[in-house]
Amino acid sequence: MHQSRQGYWSAIGCYVIWGVMPIYMRLMKSVPPLQIVTHRLLWSCLILLGILWFSKNLKSLISVITPKLLAIYTLSALCIGSNWLLYVLGTNQGQVTEVSLGYFINPLVSVLLGVVVLGERLRPWQIAAVGLGVIGVSYLSYSYGSIPWLALGLALSFGFYGLIRKMAPLGATQGLGLETFILLPFALAYMTYLMFTHQSAFTNQGWGIDLLLLSAGLVTTVPLLLFNNAAQKISLTLMGVFQYIGPSLQFLIGIFLYDEPISHEVLTGFICVWVGLFIFAMEGFWRHQTRSRNAA
Image (cartoon, rainbow, N blue to C red; front, side):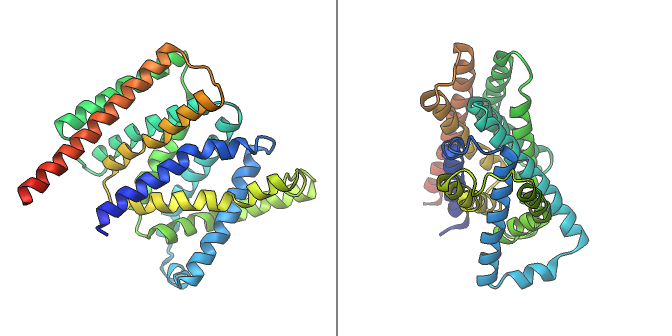
């Protein structure tokens, strides 16, 4: 499969999984958010350790670790760790629509970082599409009546995570493995504290919660591996476009599944963003068709 096409499907896959993840997270409302994040980290680390071991990439990862590499992946680990925590907090506190706003803002952050840092260029119709997105997000922020700090935190943390992973030298599995290894000591220390103080939800809230916490590693690892694979194969600008899939699904889940209130003003803002996405997608499709005809 062509690398760019593989990148397209990886991006679509990760954003669909992230889009429906609020359903999974809401099943663990009784578990404190930091504990959920800790379990995501612990089980993800074990899964990645297994993948690296069986693929014989663990030794090669250890051999290339330098202070500079550790610094790069410590930054990306902090970005993704803080993003996880904000996501769980928002989802379990009944703020799924604001969470979706964060991920609507995130593609604009990705596009901006792609243009400013990586020198990626936008074509005229792409500029128009991004402009509509900016208008929609600005109107959404205005409609909320205050600065949406949760949404901004989600957008910035994941936007910079994508930028760092785009520029980082390691592959998807090795990079994600190193990130989880860096955060692992903190997770183990926190889990030890919870066990000694009898505050751990694991094994104390029934087998259903235990299964959900145990599956956190798989739910976390699969979309992140897809994301990192996509980030290395397609442009950051295009990643920003695909990123609208996730918050669109989150928005629909928040409104129709969890009955979160939505005003006409907020709906107008979301429609602006969706129209911008449609223009961006159609421009890309038209350009691809034109290139195919010219090549023929």
